[in-house]
Image (cartoon, rainbow, N blue to C red):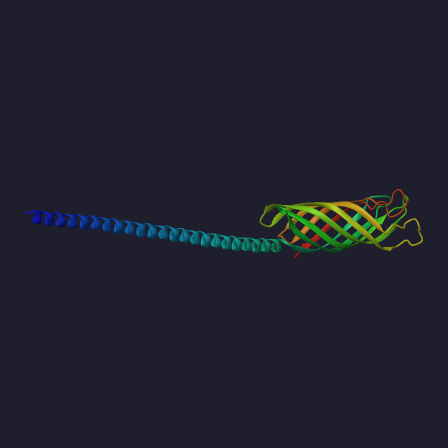
Length: 239
């Protein structure tokens, strides 16, 4: 009987130890599975982060390329707009010296008008031959041929599709080419600096007619009446 009880206890102990070992094995397996799942989850998060960063980088690169393309397109449009508004013209006119005695004056040349900051505003620069008259002393005539370089700021005000009003004003520089009274040694100055302005009408975006004034600052002679002042009636054709 004792042997039977001892055998039964040994069997129960063996079964109990086996159950404990199985429990440990299951726990280890579960722990291993949990660790594997966590590792896979961590790898999945890292992969998702890398994919998200790659997507952001691709979007940033695309945005940068689009911005560069838009800037280039805008620059090309600005250049086209500038060159489309750049105008060249031939100009000429007749004037009257405002002194004693009054003398006729003539000039002619070419100029260029380019857009300047505001819509309808422009900057004009030109090169002209100008035959001017002045009087070193009352009732004495002096005629001089100048190379005239005007720089003016202008503004065109459209009145309708084919008619516009314009004004312009600015300085000019005269460089003496020929003096037609060589015996007068008092007239020795080669330069004249002055201020001029015009106002008039533009027809059909091609023809311009204006009335203007010039005021010379440096007299070509030592005489007190020798300033190159005049009133001008001018016309221009724009290409």
